[in-house]
Length: 139
Image (cartoon, rainbow, N blue to C red; front, top):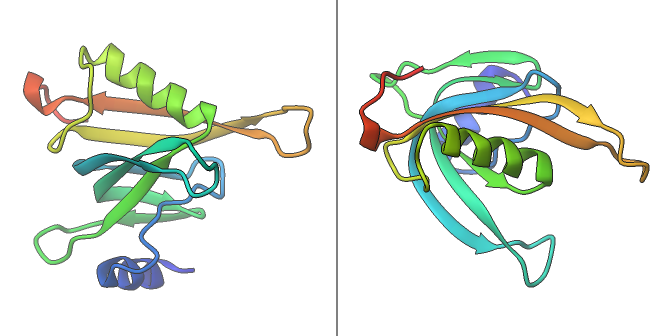
């Protein structure tokens, strides 16, 4: 998928989930919605679904920067897996918040992998978080 395909599909609302196939892939933007949903991959468990108005992203090694005056791209981030949950949780706490709300800002990056001894490595992430309530300067 190239950047043009990414924008076209995201603008249509289809294929809106953010994936992180390559180390270095990331997303930066404002949280527009946040909800707990049933995890379709693990019956009986819930995951956090974040909707992010994308400002910048690296998707499958391709850089994307959005001009919100002419287009808006919203991607869903499904917070599953210990690497992603831990990175976001720590970033929220470091920012002095106890929740994620619309208007908050998030930067999430696939930073590496860790062997689990079970075949597929665990994805590791780093995150930065700014709470809209604190009025802090955006990153």
